[in-house]
Every structure is written in structure tokens, then in C-alpha cells.
Image (cartoon, rainbow, N blue to C red; front, side, top):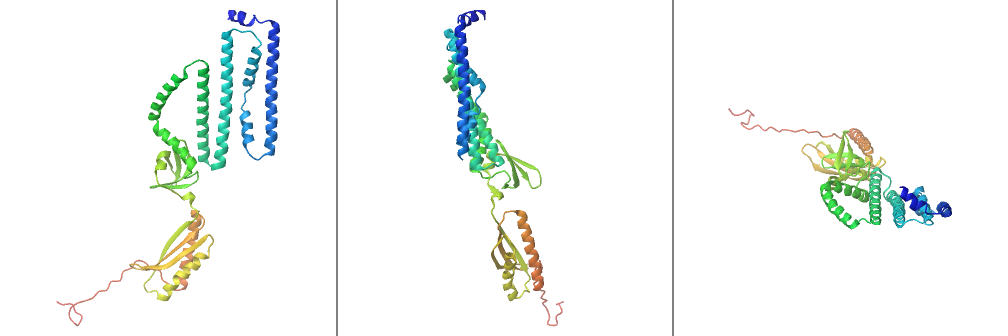
Length: 359
């Protein structure tokens, strides 16, 4: 250490140190003024435009670290001093590492802000979108820093090609070991991009039904109607046939009314019109058809189809209940009897003409 101080520091006269100090201060001041000037210009442009590109640039430059300006100023001042080639080489490696680190911060911030801007503008702000946006931001940041570290190692003289080859072989082995996890990760990205469902949608998967609570990197969580939480992997979820009731725009309703065989033909012909008038009297309904459909085992069946133009299940049930009550009242007023399961047995006695059974 004493030898280093004597050869590297004390060999420079005081005048050179003063000049180096002036260069250091001037460089630091210039960098600060340049940063503030760029910020002022960008803020002025951002106030006059509606696009978010300038906001993205401002956010990126906002990630400039003070140590970056300090390191650049120190390196600029050191150029005035007379150091050995070994010391110059060390200082060069340090300043390159600082520049690469700051560049990685800028690029990482740019990618994170860009992904966030695109994701929210393109896919909204539901929980699934926000989760996947965070995953993409993490992956992009990791990739940027991996490249920066490789460049720093290359600058230090380390053979990066051999390291990358070794990492590639290790990466293949790791990918085979965690292929199910990677499949779920890519499935979560597919859910973001294709949006087969979002948080809050009611899904039916085979014999399971639930409302989407969270879309994670590996699993999706649903809350069933009975209260328990259903957890399934993203890849298995996308492989299933999903019935998404959250995307329902209107609900088709079909119901059947059975009347007795003693109903007159005139009443039977009038029933579809009665039901039509009842259905059309309610808001959020669109009548489709009502017909005397079939001769049932113990009833004459009238089938009616209509649509509830809102997807809410509670609205559907309220409307159907009101229609049922109105049909019940109207049939009572018209003396039309509802059918219920009955059987009529006809007994024919065989034998003598006097009606007595043969002995």
C-alpha cells in the first residue's frame, strides 16, 4: 500500500492534483446541469403532448444514480494525473462497469415502464393482468442484468463464451427439471395475452365451478360457490374446456308448463299468447317463442323460451319467479288446471253377461 501511494499518488505534483480537482468539479457540475436541463425540456414537452412516450423517457432518466455522475467525474479528473498502466487499466474497468450498470438500470426501467404502459392500455387493470405484468417485468429485468454482467466479465478479460456454453448446458438440465413450472409460467403469459378469463369471472371446469380470485405465475385460484378455494395449475387449466359465465351477455331461459288433458282446445291455443304477454311485460327480457310442444304422460306440455338481456344470475331468478307467479295467477283466473303426475286405470271385467265373475 505504501509503495502504491508513493508511485501512484506522490509522483503527481500538487498542481496536477489541483487541475484534476478542477476537472472533477467541472465534470460533475456539467453532468448535473445537463441532467436538470434535459429534465426541464422533457417536462415542458410532456405538458404539451398527450402521448406517454415522453413520460416513459422521464421515468427512465429518473433512474439515474448519483454514483454514476460521481464515477464519471472522478474518471475525468484522473485523466489529468499520471498513473501506471495497471492503475489506468483498473480505473477503466471500474468506469466501464459503472457505465454498464447504469445502462442496465436505464434499459430495465424502460422495459418495466413500457410493459406496464402497454399491458394496462391493452388489457386493462384486472388482477390477472397486473400479476403477469409484474412477471414480465421481473423476467425482463433479470435478462437485462444478465447481459450487463456478461459484458462486465468480458471487459475484465474473462472468457464469456465458455461461461455461456456451460450455462447453456446447465440451463437445459434446469429446464428439464422444472419443465412443469415453465409450462405454468408460459400458460400465465398466455392467459394475459389471450384473456380467456379475468379475475371475477365465474368459470365451470368439468365438475368444478368457482369465481376467479387470483391468477398467479404457477396457479390460478377460484372460490367455489360453497366457499372453499379451488387451486389448479395454469397449464392444466388451459388444457380444460372452460365455460366462462363471466363473458355471458344474456341468458337463455327455457321452461315448460304442463296442463291437464281436460283443458279445452281453445284454452290450449290461448296459453302461448298469455305467457308471451307475461314475459314481455318485464324489463330486460326478450321473448323468443312459446308453443304447445307435446303430449306428455300425464300433461299437455307448453314450452316457452325467452332471454334475460343482463347476465346477472340474481336478475334471472327474480324475473323467472315473477313470471311463474303471474302464470299461476293467470291460469287460476282462467280456470286452467296445472297437471301433476296422475294415472287413470280402466278395469274391464270379463265373464258372464250379468257381470258376475266366472266361478
